[in-house]
Image (cartoon, rainbow, N blue to C red):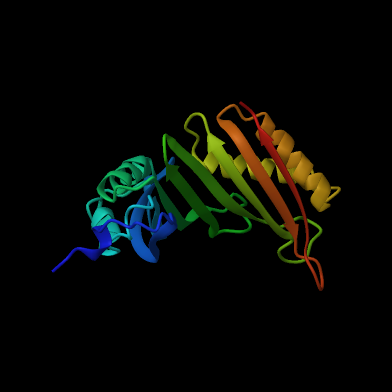
Length: 224
């Protein structure tokens, strides 16, 4: 039987993205206090293919992922991307990993675990590009219930613990809690990230869950 996926394609139309989505997969995440935190991620894997291939076998994505079974952590994303690019003979490889991360609440009168939604997006063409996205829920002293969320996307130039990044976000929000507008809190958080040496680029979106609608503000900066 012919391998249709690997036949030459003379139409000269590049397939920009082909892959698989929403694969549930167990991963481990570094945890400063407990060393490792086990969680379940949702994984998207896709590649850019050159025009001379008709496509690729979708099962190969899962085969590559399964080679890292039991050893899949965020530090190995570059290895998975490299294998995807080489094994699928692709122009570029992309991997998106979305997972919940849990930390104990810091206040003694509010015991329990806080959940943070995280997303790591990695791309490999000539070199690896990694972006970590973190959603931090915001509750302010004068607000009834959840005030809103801060969505922070960063590129790193050196390692930083997820706990430290979350802590810096929360400290910046507490420092600006008196004014409590999306503009002021977004600016306060932007200033805090601007002073974080481990970060080379960031983007912040601050959202307030107001009655009947949501208000938001964004800021983005490259530090390198």
